[in-house]
Image 1: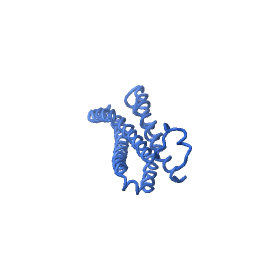
Image 2: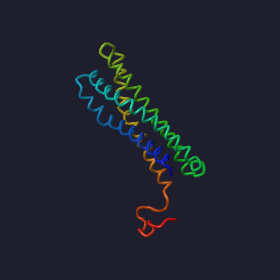
Image 3: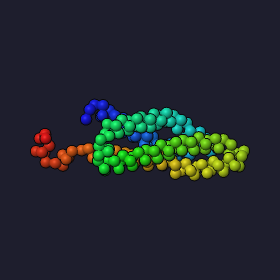
Image 4: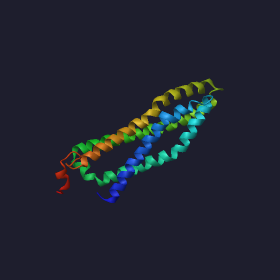
Length: 180
């Protein structure tokens, strides 16, 4: 393995960790903390402020995750084509990545739309109903990104294990010191 491969793989894992961790922190901490605001608009403003600060970091993480994923795929193209379990895992990982991007984008879009609806909810009953519908939608959507990105981390662990040699942590010490 080259230093380039190590840097690309580390980038891929760290950016997924940021994507996963940020979305999990938002769902588990930021959004519930924002509910302590005085009214619906105040609560939306608190959540919006946090997500606006995190958004550029998450956007960069997603972009670098995609670029590093492409680099890993190119680096391992022979194994992806010739090794059936790897092929299946890469197809699943690609589909899960697309799903994670879609739910992240939809959460961003719905969150922005919710803020706009809450602004007009007091004066417009239709906006109030729309805000309630979006709040329900965000209730499950906020957990979709951490769930899908956690799946990506699991698939990365699986793919990493496929590349490991036969020597493992529990092998006899005398066998670990020998090189083949």
